[in-house]
Length: 145
Image (cartoon, rainbow, N blue to C red; front, side, top):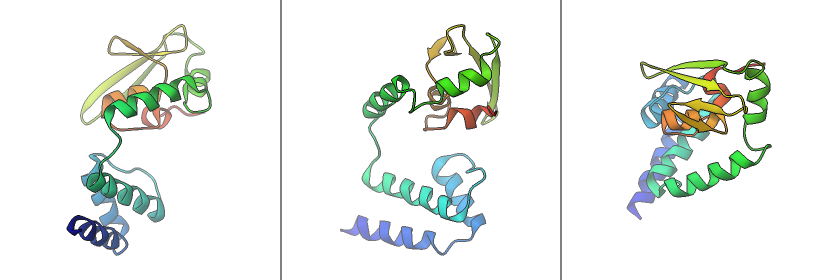
């Protein structure tokens, strides 16, 4: 297949690029900077994205199902960790500037996150709503502890 030959060539080319070139390719493929990472992790993420482009990614409906499962699993999402760090005071607000626009999330009294008038079970779900891609919510909003 022609397409698989092109993909194979693209993957091989990834291994010849410098770190700066990999960062630029990541930015082109994902639409945002990769952040702190090593060459191995960056190549892995780029190759995954190339395969996703050539073979197709997870359908939005399937992703919604997976997100719903993760939201109900305390080991699969950051809700319990983020709530401990951010909801000691109800009404805590988290801010993030993304692509030139500022976003605000508030911690509700039930430990859930309120963004743009909707309630989310996790910061990751809010980050996904903002970016359209899967993010670690704690990382996206800079929640540490």
